[in-house]
Image (cartoon, rainbow over all chains, first blue to last red; front, side, top):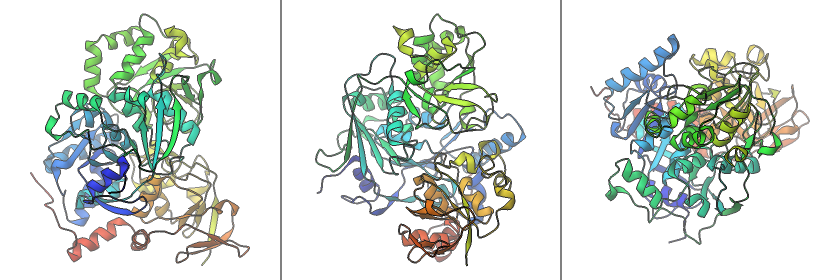
Length: 422
Length: 170
């Protein structure tokens, strides 16, 4: 058998083949289809009715209400009501309503395992690649095709192996790693191929930190953002109740002689990164934007408000107050993460520092809500800072890690979090 | 038949094509706001058959297919650019929007009249110069010609090559 990358092994498995070649188009059976209130029922229901067919296998569907919750107006109420009614009508077994953002809820409820082929009705679906699953985002019509047939086509990608060596310094995190890579390769630099994150610096990351890498593979233009599963993956999956018999961490890795396009990075010398308006690819060392005055700091989104992100922010904010006049908002990515953060005293630390806590939903990140004021300078843990993305066309949004966002909230201007942690 | 060119720059993202603030609305309403921050006159004055010509990375950002469907609603015949977001590329063909990956797209100008030849495929500019485009897999070309994936699913359900599933479970 020819040497295969992790991406090839996953796609060979999903297409019932021993091996697959780069660039061939294969038809894959889908192990899991995830969608949310915005991309899902309100689009799928009328199209399925028009086709006169139903869901191929409801046990493989996960519906998460996270975009239009909590419902702020009549349109939101209508969209979420459609989702709830459809979930009942279809008797869907896996529905998560207002308990967090889909990309975080999916693994924490034990739906992901290495070796799976998953699609998500959301562009940040590569997040699932952190678990050694081939997961990618699709639009609603393509999701309709999946829901009607249980299958999807994939062009077997090349693999860009992002190999990180060494140890990150304190106050530097996965968000900085991925911003650095996006800055280097650009918004479409991965050309819709598979990115695999590897090396000892990646192996040292927690699952949620790996999820941050895979999540922003989307901003690199990758179809999938993979991390080979290991003992860290196994421990996480056991914690969330996945049966050990169904977890294979030995097979799902890139063969050492498989052809990849490899890039090497030094984690030890990585400085905190900040992406300047209006593109994640405008990422530079924090020194370049240091001193930029801020009115809003936002810790939210699947990218930047998971438990590990909240812990990072709290380590900076502990016993301190945000700068006068600065608004700090925290929207924990899931209810479970928020509950654990509460048990650890992290939510108390955040609110005592002056943070206002928002619901466990996509909130301002998707721009559907509109809590970012016009004209404001904003620093956010989110994934995208396109002009107008967060709802306000004149806002200047800077992207950074939870450490950098928290430290900058204290200073009222962008600063290097290592100055606070030192 | 010739097509009028609307010329855009690089990195046109899905929030420009289908702004988040209007995502609650139907596609007709979203289309009225398509590209309004870049070209406020676009949605009001684009005519069926026009094409968009853009720089690299057209369609980066969200998975929202309204970013492609809005252009179909407005009658845009094709988008021609040196590169596209991979996710946008899939969405476009699924909703019946033709994309042509054309390395020399940026040599075309605002207002140019151009012709499309899908069999080659290539684009011919007003000076008669043919600009080659990357080949499109046959099944995608068939899909866009059929008007999108929805039409193909209907056909497959009708001819029995796709199995029907129960429409209600409870």
